[in-house]
Length: 431
Image (cartoon, rainbow, N blue to C red; front, side, top):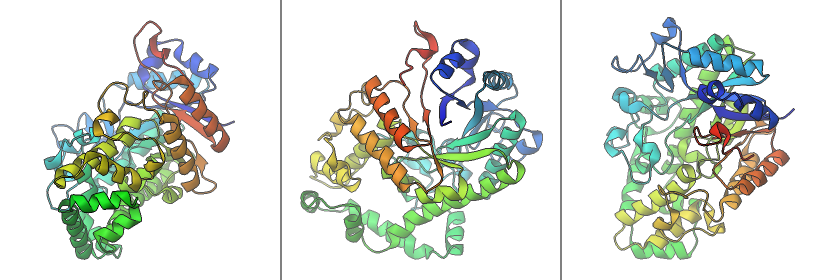
């Protein structure tokens, strides 16, 4: 039987008696449940957050003293025959509450000095350094404790990465002392890498509009950009960031599997065209995850916002650069010049109603990323793409489901329900 999962919270399970039966009728057999968790006192003592917030949150997790709703939802799902995985965050989100644990820009400044950034939803909450042993020890202990305490079948991490590329400054971190020490221990020439990346950033900021226009007309790609911006330091930087995520997740998984060998441990992966920029290399998922699960539903935040933010930044940096030229350059870098893309930032509609569901090439773009994710995934590792379960046109969703059925071992839907309205939680059940 193929896996068919949905993301949910306890609320619809407990408040809508038709919710779980409707899922079962759709063939769903897995509920991925998010919310606040109650952990053991021993694990809570390892929470690295400051005293003023540590009673309600740790890195990646919301905490509570009353987990009765979570327990009742898990019991209800199990009674109906569903498997249950917990959903938890990782490095992205919450570090604004713990400056000592936060990613630092290559300039040495904390990431909070650059946030919030234009067109970047994810810059409103900040990233923890992935090489901080305090944070990573907490993840290993907390994830394991939660799965064992709630007696569920596994855990599915989300956003186990840096911020999305639309938060441009985030791409130049983390460069804290911990990261410098770790990079050297892995054989990176830290000072050379840091100097090269800083120089490339400065060169980009002082680029000539005419030159960029010419490069746009030549339809140069990402490797061409690496030639223009200098030596191997940029490649080393991207690989170091990915090594940091991979190494940390592997250590967390090793601890988890030692304590809970029969439980599932995995993480979703970022949209493949942008994955390396958030620290995800698809081939590495075999090292730390029981599956590959490309997170494809957030079309505005994880696709279009990147183009808007990068084009906007280029126009701010380079005097006289035309917006259409900037967008053309950015589309080309990620292979999106194959699609009928907007020629102005305004037409991308980032932050506006209808941004996703009214996008002309919505199906073509997501279908391409879905097939690319499969092609990049390690052979033999279960492949569970995450697709939109509502909001998008029903025909788009169903066509994507057919592709997923063709190439995957299952599918996960998100978000599935919207509370309220005449039909309650299921009023946008489209798949």
